Image 1 (cartoon, helix red, strand yellow):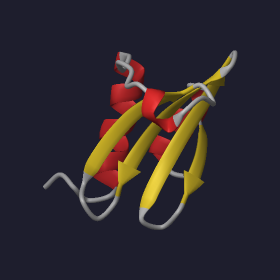
Image 2: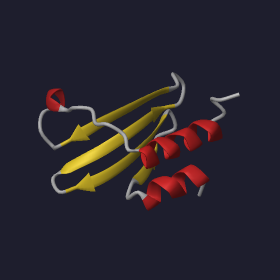
Image 3: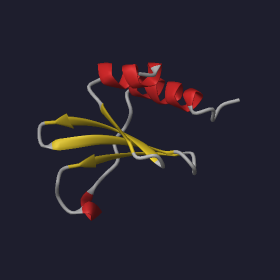
Length: 81
């Protein structure tokens, strides 16, 4: 497990790797907090999924620990030079 994956795990996130994107999900009550890292396009998205309509999903702000884990993953992916 990579250092970034360990950091996300410590924050309560579960990793899913789809090849073209990596998703970290943390469930809190009836909501899933999702951080998606799109590999090819080098984009990062956050969203709260409450199980309702896809159009009702909303983004969420990042705490410093989440940002540090994202930065570590970006380094591991070789996005920073």
